[in-house]
Image (cartoon, rainbow, N blue to C red; front, side):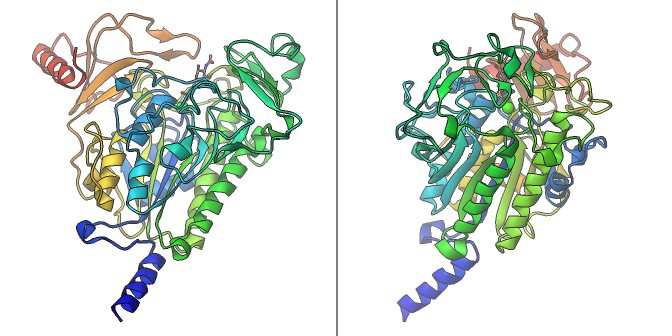
Length: 507
Ligand code: NG6
Ligand code: CA
């Protein structure tokens, strides 16, 4: 009888999307967890964050019916370090290799680390990543035609369907679990970031191949699908992706994972990291979205991504899971317009402000580099609100560990569960931010940018780096645009901030 009751409970819990709790995990709630993570989406690119030129109704719905954070940060102003920090809960600047990686880089995450998916697996979850990876694969000598080792499946993901790096880097193929999808044995794929393969065309030798987009800076190696890329590749023709279909494909894979892993079938909750490729360069939305924004491919790609967000939410609803899924929406770093292709992002921008009221953008130590849209949504559980609490993507690991009754494996990651659930306005007191290897320090209302050598303007992308020979101190509550450097007039505050930063970062 006892056995029957527990089986019954198991079935009911399974239907609810919750898994049975051990006695030591009494308080744990185990919703499905969906992290929707965009690439280079700026604080001002979501209409719920105040802009009116580019409408993102599906993301807005999450924002308006969940917690919309006004002080939500990515860990870094570029992709790889932010994703590293999100998955490991470790500040990216603690790992010197956590920089923008080439497509053939070795796996950045030490396989002995407790990652977010590993922690969730321990808590009984099925885990998946679909979309952009950009955290390295293998040990530096990958044969892309063989079973891939040291990939997402080795750091906690039960299922992975990814691109290795970025849409502008080779190899331009999809990888499902340990295999490149669609490869044919008689046409192996070769990849190099050192030199071209003999006789293969590049954007330099054969500019006529660039039928869809031309390079502005970088991006002049192998050309695939009319678009020049970073790095060289040869062969693998049957496996090469079609950029125009990428959003639909990732969406299909993400939807399929949800229905295949509906807790009513598996008896386990799921965690999915849905990492969309938009609006990173090259921006190649499906033809259904071309021209929709009036802003060229960048705006169209954002509209396409917003549609994908709506579709994935519809899928949760269709599977009966919308009330037991915690959704976290964010972006890996701030916005950039010209990131290396001629794609009209600058020319057709009009009045749109991708960074909103913030200064800087991608690659920048100024706020727009790392302050990004950050939304938590859980139908029926999270009350709609705007929160000024200071939260970072680095805190997701500890906060979720707390929710599901697991211990937090990283000291850098702080338990912000109450803030994420909209139960408290209290966030972190302090946070270290990173941009291309340089650091800034946020504490309360203030941000400190220490002096650095280097250019104040990244001329290629036309974004202020935040670099100056002087200390910079800003009060972000009064001066979101970081116009007024208070370092001279607030010497005590400056000292306090220097000491605070030194305590976390060391000398
Ligand atoms: C840069 C690329 C840029 C983008 C970025 C990575 C050049 C000149 N620029 O090196 O286009 O790919 O790396 O972006 O090659 S991120 O969002 O993945 O960090
Ligand atoms: Ca990015």
